[in-house]
Length: 341
Image (cartoon, rainbow, N blue to C red; front, side):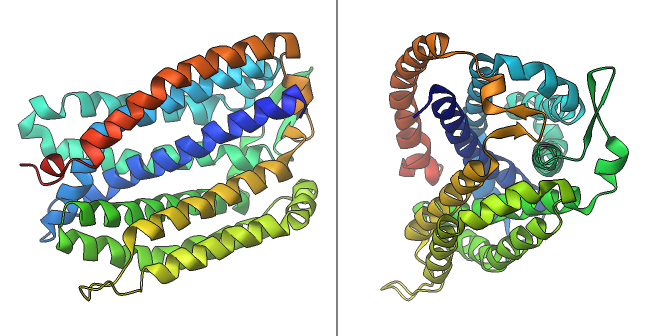
């Protein structure tokens, strides 16, 4: 495997991890807002209990992803920073506001309602801004004036593919978070919250698949190249759909105690579904970072610099992985925390 291909594969893997963690983080904030004042208090409690320790981990992977882009593809930063300045800057601003509120949530009890709304609203807006980057990379929305790249906001904001991408990102976020919080509620033995999140997972699953298929149909004319590549990767996308169907069926299966849903196997299947889909889409996107102006090889650093950095990354993850495992055991498996004992 070429060094540039390995670099973009690592980058895509970090993006997949952040997409999963971000979906859980932002989705939990949204569900916590929705059920914060309703009769189904247990659903809000489960969402907030999960959200409380996990947003820090999500931000860690975002930082790692951004640093990886800059170090692995330094020659791409000029174009990327020019055309993605507005969505990324707005996303980071909202993320900063959200993080600030999270830090002080335990010390500002009288503002708990505002904190809940801030977490829920930003949990929708931030993913929408980040997902809006994808259609920009497909082609047709960037022009050059005196060799300076400029994003055509008028064309982007009036094109249906932008809004379909946003709708796909939001439906995916809510579906993944609903399935995971269903499993989290099972661990806490909170069956009211379990039934609530299962109910949402049942309708969000088909919606997310339907929106994904419709989104491809709204690609701009310039994106014919990636549509052809997606068709060539039909087998991997087919496996992704198969994992979804298995995971969705698991939501209906009865357990020995008569309760519907096999939460943990369903979570595993859904993660595999999006894993296969994201890597298939990433493969279809090659060799371009932004079509047709920036390819992977154009933005890549060089092999002699890349491999020493790869060793540094390996050492760093060798330190982080045990820490993440300890975090998982403390906050996501410890029944005393799950039940707030």
